[in-house]
Amino acid sequence: MSKHLQYNKADSKDVEYVLSILSRVYPVDIKLKKEFEQHLLRLRIKKDQILFNENEVCEYIYFIVKGALMGCTTHNKQKITTYISVENDFVSSISGLHGSGYSQEYVVAVEDTDLLAIHNNELNRLFAHHFDLNYIFRVILEKYYKDAQQRAHIIRVGNAKERYLYFAKTNPGYLDRLPLALVASLLNVKASTLLSIKKNFSKPKEQNKDLAECGQKLELYVNKHQLFRQKDIRLHSLAQRIGISSHELSVVLNNYFNKSFIDYINQYRVNWIKGSIQNRDIMQNFTLEALAYSAGFSSRSAFYSSFKKLVGMSPIEYSKTLNQEKL
Image (cartoon, rainbow, N blue to C red; front, side, top):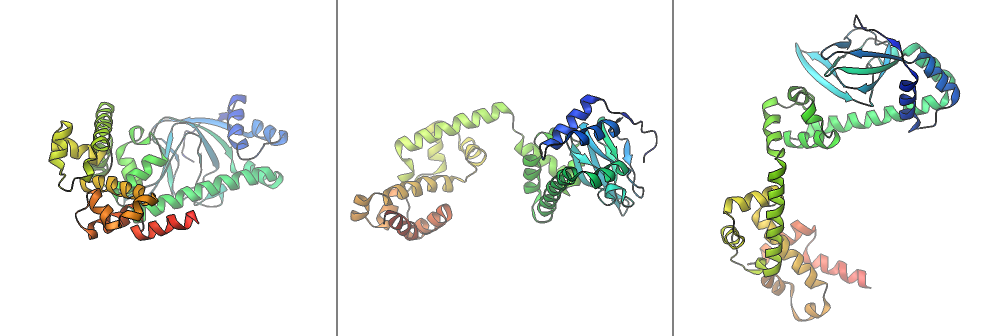
């Protein structure tokens, strides 16, 4: 263990808190509660202080009450972040779990951190006498394993943007809280790349509000005038109609609707055709190609290509599916 760590007996409030976390998995009985009251410890470590080192036995399993820790290893003299844990996470040596061997990683505080701890000797004794504790920790380890597998997968196959979005989704608020270099190391991307992606996604609230207002205005205008049915509709002409510049319209389409101009217009066309296909009176008098031209498509190939891209099947397959549902 890192030197100068001061362990004190946890108070009743600490015990109640950690037991409330465990009880979310399975109820904790009175005997086990008394064991935690007797053996649970508390400590505080400062930012950048090491909790335990590589090549030493981690004697405790820890629970983070407040703060953040990171697990690290070294390869070719380079530090690699293997995980980040914050409030309500359990932390110990992964390679030397329950004191079974020497740790291949070290753990250091990212922030001033308050921890609860129980010695592995006591924990292993409790495992031998309390089935409920075995079950609780099995569930906790299963969740950790699934999270680690998902993280490993996205880091192996995802690009930098996908890794950023994964981390932002699974760790809300952490990108603003944790050092950028630390998150970049965890996601195996350059810090400069992560910063650039973060800037693109972290738009001011006022800008987001303006995008939403402009997007809603665009929706109302396109729906009211059915502009998508005009074969010659272009980005600049649509921008002029709603009173904004072509650049502003591109920003709204890309950042609010996450679509290109042509995909945005074709989505309207395809939705209009889908509604027409569901109307038997219309289908008795019009072919699919006639509907496509009426919706604004300039060619049969463009119609079929866009329909399959946006619906996942050809217009003929879609029509057959509707007919089968009506039988």
